[in-house]
Length: 547
Ligand SMILES: *[C@@H]1O[C@H](CO)[C@@H](O)[C@H](O)[C@H]1NC(C)=O
Ligand SMILES: *[C@@H]1O[C@H](CO)[C@@H](O)[C@H](O)[C@H]1NC(C)=O
Ligand SMILES: *[C@@H]1O[C@H](CO)[C@@H](O)[C@H](O)[C@H]1NC(C)=O
Ligand SMILES: *[C@@H]1O[C@H](CO)[C@@H](O)[C@H](O)[C@H]1NC(C)=O
Ligand SMILES: *[C@@H]1O[C@H](CO)[C@@H](O)[C@H](O)[C@H]1NC(C)=O
Ligand SMILES: *[C@@H]1O[C@H](CO)[C@@H](O)[C@H](O)[C@H]1NC(C)=O
Ligand SMILES: *[C@@H]1O[C@H](CO)[C@@H](O)[C@H](O)[C@H]1NC(C)=O
Image 1: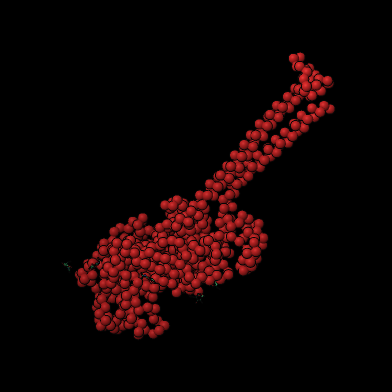
Image 2: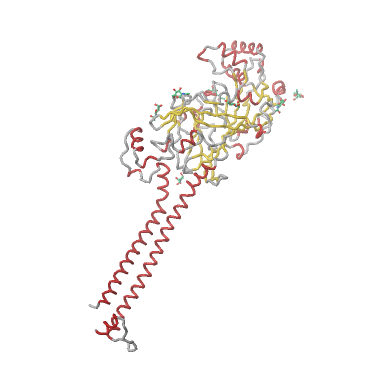
């Protein structure tokens, strides 16, 4: 066997092996690219939930108690960094406990400008909407206790600061509003014995209590001394006592709340992330007729269980609203910082007087008119009715009963929350609620004898956040935009590299097959060397020639 030919043959084999290797790599890369493109979303999802890339079914069997799991996590298994779960020390926990946001409350007060004519002449009340009176807020959760069972207990602490610079007016402005403690008492006495009503009338005469009061906006919100409440505090037996002698619509909200709240952290079940488990040791409300309506299994509106789809109904629980507020997808939004999100808003029939709201009317029928929500059971039996501002989504007749309220506009008066769907974080929000007083006419009490049955609007407010700070926004942008980009980059990159290698392999293959035919050709040439060929020092040639 000629050495030269053997060398060439080995060369040929080597080239072929290389080509086969390149070909295999190309195919692997192509497949990797495709798999990456398909499954990357799932990985990101797993990472958001658990901070690990092992799917649920591949994890070792979970230790039963939270404490054991935590111990396992600490021991270095990759379950350690579940970033979204609210665990002391994690990034989301810090944001949750002390949100780096600047929430605000804008209050609009309906000043009554014709109180005397309304009472004496039967005119419609003429209202003048004053505002906004703007307060900035600071949110904090204090006395946080980890219950070691996937829940945290804590107290809300909210500090309000009046911002004359933003409001352009003072909250010392004097306004004329219905006397809510008085009208609550008279409306409640409607079904009491007649002598009680007469007694009430004389007490009110002595205390010089009138159906309208002139107070400052600050007093209306944060409290003023009310003679009736003071009296009640002194005479009513201890157990029936109202908790305060001051009256204010936001009374007691500035500072640490006395309510102990227990919330799921997402440790056991991400679908309960940020959902209330208990509110003051109760796991449901006592007021309504069905378990569904008594449920408090909602979030406070700042975080939601992640992976929100457009079909989901988000639920927000608010103590003052006295029920869960369902929110449904409205449209896509993009925040000024460039984070994509969904806008969620209550369905149009949320306060409708229909069958699905019958459970909220234990004393009825008759029930509250469409568009109003009767919270009197949560407000010490005061006939307080909540609605959306300007009676948005409510019966036209309510707005017609007064003068000075412009027709509702969805963009200005709708309640909404913009969420980042993958992580379930609220990016911006407007919680808009109007407080109304449902007055019942009581002719036996002379001070209010001319006060007709009416739903009297008092004020509306808008509580919200405009924008998350840049550090949070950039993280959210990463969560929304990075996965698709990364997936595209990775998938396309791998695929492109695969294609390149494939081309290389094919080129090599063609080249080598070309060379192979050259080899054969050369074999022929051996038999019949070209005549022009001059014998050279080339070994191969000489060897060939000799043969
Ligand atoms: C509210 O209305 C009353 C008249 O009823 C008026 O005297 C008062 O100035 C008004 N308040 C403001 C801040 O405009
Ligand atoms: C009461 O109403 C009558 C007729 O509607 C009107 O003439 C009169 O001026 C009103 N009185 C006041 C104080 O507005
Ligand atoms: C913190 O919470 C615990 C248990 O809920 C309670 O006993 C304690 O009084 C609270 N401390 C403060 C300062 O609220
Ligand atoms: C977790 O523990 C707290 C405090 O002991 C308790 O109030 C709560 O109901 C428990 N939650 C669950 C889901 O077991
Ligand atoms: C709320 O409380 C803080 C301090 O506790 C106080 O500085 C602030 O003025 C209060 N805000 C209002 C609106 O009363
Ligand atoms: C949402 O619900 C509609 C109708 O119920 C259904 O056709 C659609 O597939 C659902 N979409 C998702 C993403 O679940
Ligand atoms: C509001 O609810 C209370 C308590 O259930 C009830 O007594 C009252 O009649 C209700 N008001 C209206 C207007 O339905």
